Length: 416
Image 1 (cartoon, rainbow, N blue to C red):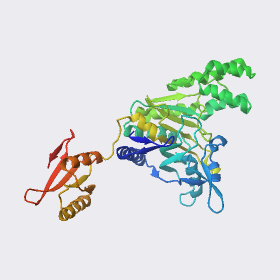
Image 2 (cartoon, one colour):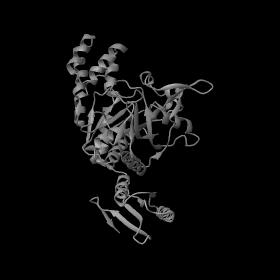
Image 3 (cartoon, helix red, strand yellow):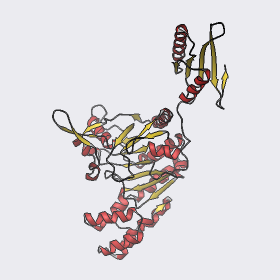
Image 4 (cartoon, one colour):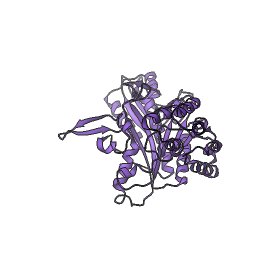
């Protein structure tokens, strides 16, 4: 990725990596824009009580908070953008936005969380979208199709979607009536896909063996969407029809996205505010999802009048690991270095400044650097990503000579 490791979960991005990150963000936001999503910005620091209203007790434990200001107010660093946008929507619907507005919003943000284990990062970099005011299957399908288009535009290949629904595994466990402690252990077995262990545990807890067997079958219910037929007899499940409708919609409108769609009917992980479809994207060679999201119809109601919503966030660090050397770059070999030989006088320095200013006036990035030989100037220009070089030096008679060069595709410099 071209970064330098700092504190756990944080890196310094040196110029090439920073340029690539910017190009990646631009590609993603640009794709969102073509689908009608408009960018918003949420604050890095939020009143803790406001942020906490959108988080579960477990998520609050990972919020970085501190006391600030004369009133000793407890504030927190942004740990999750979705609750912030839920708060934003609740506060502005009926004023800035009509009360019945359907909103397509996008964002780029850094989030900070106390790690829950040694593998989790403290700082995460995200680009995402939120689709507010539409509770239909078409909206859920749009998010899948948009994610497919954005990741493809970023240059990612070989990825697959993993679609689930909060009403399936959680509905089955709700129907069992387990107490909180027993349920936590059961969810852990389900998350590990331990079918035998889950069936045995449920039987030990007094669940009818036939029911325990059907619930444990959720561990194997992942793969192509036709696995939905395997779990229709599991007590308490809901949401199967929604997943089938999304699949049918994608096949009809976005067949390329449907071709890389899998389902995981035993998924229990994720933010507690998800109420329906959950979405993840996996890529070979990357241990964490490059994208996570889902439907959260009840979250905005925690801050005001409720409305349905769905969204996803792309983990930029995971995406860059998945891309490797592929994907969008910085702005390519653009820009012009105006370089001066060490023997140049003050008049040459003024001329160099004028030439750089003239280039910038045409929209070409340009800057001046002094005291370089031609060989050094070529190295500096290439390292900075400049595709053009203007080199000033005195000739044998003491007059100023100007050499104009451009970098070719093979990395050499040729006169223009």
